[in-house]
Image 1 (cartoon, protein in one colour):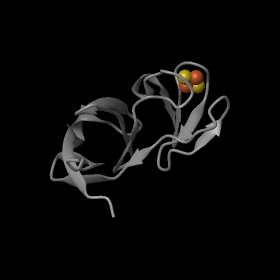
Image 2 (tube, rainbow, N blue to C red):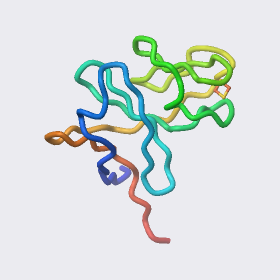
Image 3 (cartoon, rainbow, N blue to C red):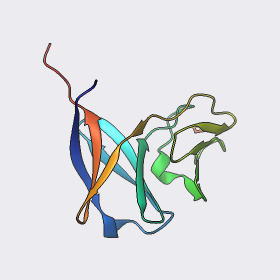
Length: 110
Ligand code: FES
């Protein structure tokens, strides 16, 4: 099982329902979403080309890419609209008090 380290990426008050914002942890660019009282994290870059998902449009539980109209389910990262065919990677999210934390794999020294 992959060991995860949780990193603070936002405060709960930074996002309203339906918001998306960008966060960076080390070299990993993320998109952080709020749907109701729940928070989600996906890769920050579209799987079709180099679009930043935080510049996209949240429609219900879908994030639409700002470039070519591709779209993904926020909760699962599943690609649901062409030209996107590869799912977005998703990351586990925890809320600790006011902190939104995202779990990323711990890189083991070689
Ligand atoms: Fe996202 Fe093309 S870059 S749909």
